[in-house]
Length: 332
Image: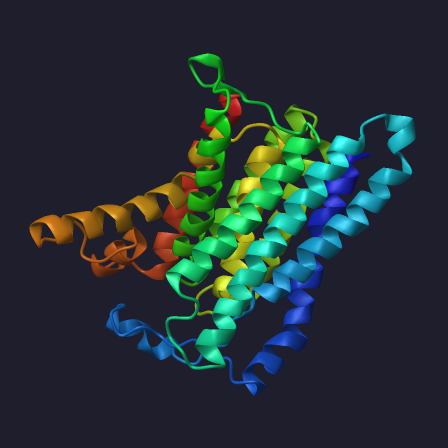
């Protein structure tokens, strides 16, 4: 029944996301919420100017619909299967509301950029403040309901108790990972493809560890990303915007903490980490030496400048995620 519920989550999320694009994308075009391509980006991205953004609402609706339908189906057999308890429910909905919180911040940012025509959107201080509020609410929800453990299973080292330091690391880590996912959204289909693979890996991990509601959440995330690729794969007809990428960031961390495997976020989400670190390295190098390490950051733009096509980069980054995902599964 658990497998059936997960398959249901994938199918419902995929179909909902793909089909509502038929309605929502024309609406976004009529509202003229087109993406403004930065002049500092690759020159050949100029032809993307005006492509509708804020398309993340497609998979947000699809994922939530998939979760509700699949959870309802699983709940019908919960007593018989004895697979669900209150902590499962808390992990599930805390993760969804965490993702919605980040998505809402992204929505405000997109609104300011494309409707108010202020290219910088929310200020760095505003965005950071709002993000930390969402992180703290999510973390507090898990903490007070005993859904967290300060003991982390580190590969090759075994269980390590971080004590109170765990909370500081985790809160900063969640903030960092969410923004890393946001940075990954820079090419047609990139964030969607990488996150779809990430979701598949966590479907396997959550099933092995018997976190069944997290299995549903991962399945719905996978279906939503694949459904969005119908519209977002090169050449993209719609962009997810910060609305979508911030929501995906919330889903990424929710799966890691929801399965009590936060360390695996860094392994399965290696592409997110590399993307973020490429920006950090580029900034530090330029400010200290006046030289750039990469032709352009985040690193997906570096590969573009090296002559790689967007499709090749998407496929390569997804393959890397799959390889590291296999390593993560072997480590649990």
